[in-house]
Structures are given as structure tokens and as C-alpha cells.
Image (cartoon, rainbow, N blue to C red; front, side, top):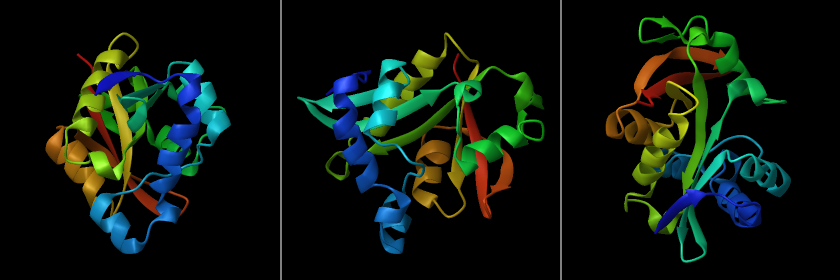
Amino acid sequence: MEYRYASEADAPAMAELFAANHHDALTERQRAEQGFVQGRFDVGVLRAMAGARELLVADDAGRIAGLLALSAPEALADPSPPVAGLLQAQEALEWQGHPLAEARWLLYGPVVVAAAYRGRGVARALFTMGVAAASERAEAVVAFIEAGNVPSWKVHVDGFGMVPLGDYVAGGRTYSAVAAPTF
């Protein structure tokens, strides 16, 4: 397995992986068992993110096994409701004794691993690479996890040690902000 920055040529495969694991494409049971991703990431958006070096991928001999986005929050032109809510909640969320708004941070996620590769360390390797890649630009990576997305909580908080910063509501849904240091 090769872990690398995504290329623009990876965009169609990344869009397919994202669509297959999107909240709206899964049943309630699937969401409860495997988690889900949110937002709209079509080929054009993913191509642009790859060109800006905002995407990391797990590449298994040409097959995209997983992806992770790392974005500068201030650079997001049209943030989704959960991201907009996170940005609005920055003053109330605390990171290492200070409001998150005072920290240099990158938005971690979405992260998604193809079903055939789950349980094989792909998410952990993407997380490790993401934290290292973010260290030059930020002191923390920050993600949001929708209430009820137990698999994501288990992976990121219980498994990777991301720290809960607090909850916020966006678009009528509750989210927990979680973070990890980059150093």
C-alpha cells in the first residue's frame, strides 16, 4: 500500500469511493455499523483539492483504498453546514486551554476507507500521514463527528486519541468537534 498526496487523475476514483460511503447512500443500519461521510465532493471538487495538495490517498496498486482531506478552514469558499457550524463555534470550542479560534488548525476530513480495506490499518496510516503533513501549517487537525456516528467516534477518539473540544449544532444536527496535535 502506498500512502501519498492525491493527483488530479485520482479524482474519479475518489468521487466513487466518497459517493459509495455518503450518508445518503447508506441505510440506517450501514451508517450505524460502518459510519459515513457527508458533504458534496464531485470529481471537479476533488480534482481541485488534489491540485491544491489537500488530499491524501491510500493507493493499492492503482486502486484508491482510502482518502483523507486536510483543508485550511479560511480557504473554504462555500463550507457545508457542519463546517460552517464548526467555524462559527471556534470561540466556544477549547483547544489546549484556549479558544480554537486562536489556534492554527486544519480541517481533518472527510476520511473514508473502502469496505474491502477496513480493519487493515488504512485509516490509521492516513491519520498518521495527515498529522505529519499538517505539522508544517498547523498546530492541530480538527474534525467533526455527527452525533450517532459511533464508528467514527470509535476510530478517531477511542482509537487515534483525538480530543473532544465540545459540541455544536448546525442544520438541526449535533456535532462533536475533535482534534489532535500535529507535533
